[in-house]
Length: 204
Image 1 (tube, rainbow, N blue to C red):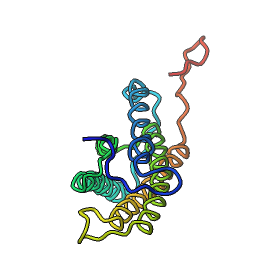
Image 2 (cartoon, one colour):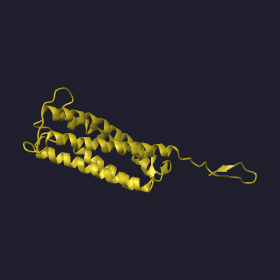
Image 3 (cartoon, rainbow, N blue to C red):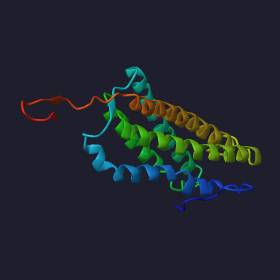
């Protein structure tokens, strides 16, 4: 199947095809690249600042909402396929969201500044591109209004689905931004020292 087919030509730029092929998938590609780059740092626990998630129930709600965003991204892809519009490179988004779910689950007991920062940037990046896409889909809804009677994926539904995902990504960004700020409020304990008779202080 071509990346994009039967797309309504919107005036101006970017087109919905460009959005689904290059712009919207970009944050997810960047997330995967960032995770590969910091993999060694993340597995070395010595220098990673950790804090417990607070409150705990809010972290669980966060995890459930990320699952909802993952499901929404799959739903969008399925409906684009059903309407024979092509999916571009959108499948990378649920892949990245699934990896984000694993990270969030892994850090359910102790959050790290490293992952919090990466996820905060990722959610912010997704919020920006989804804002652009939602604006363009709103224009699509005005220029090419369709309903369930003549379309399997009406333009109004496309707009609504992406607005929902935009709202979720914005909430995720706020949560992770607060988490990162909290890691900088952690007071790191100085190394202990002890004295040996006739020797200088030795730090451990």
